[in-house]
Length: 229
Image (cartoon, rainbow, N blue to C red; front, side, top):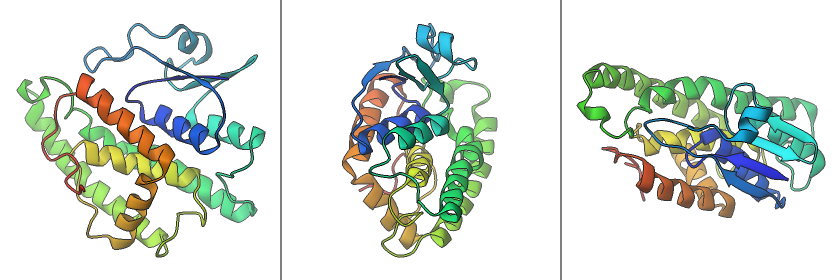
């Protein structure tokens, strides 16, 4: 099994955590990436197997998959233990919906912060306009924090046990912190959950590698990780 990943791809990191949580042996290949040119040149396996031209791509023998959700559901099918989805159909559907909310709804706000770590971005003429959009996105992110504060019971994960929803939501909020997004400390259940997910070995490894890649590829972001330690 081979995973074509990217050094700073949120959705590739989502798959990496799932593979690590399930202890599935695989080869990881990092596609070339820079903050100024993106994924250039495109990795040949990405060009061959993903019509969107994006990482992640998972190759398992003669099967090639793209899209992080499709990949994680495949991993669940071939390696059901430890599970990343609940067994009961209604709870399983709820878990998938929370994952979808992270990947599509929260991401729409997160995208408005992604200019902040591009080298030289603060010197560009559109910086002020982009920061105005970012301020509105931070308000939306705070509303997302409030939503997930309500989804969590004390000391719990989003779907009872640790799941794909926890991976997806955590990554959105971790990237928000990395890009100078709003504090989540005023939401005690969310903050407790965030720290517990962050401490999981698979997640801790992802964070270490992401920060190391940031040091090489990204500009420093003022206000990043305001909730640390």
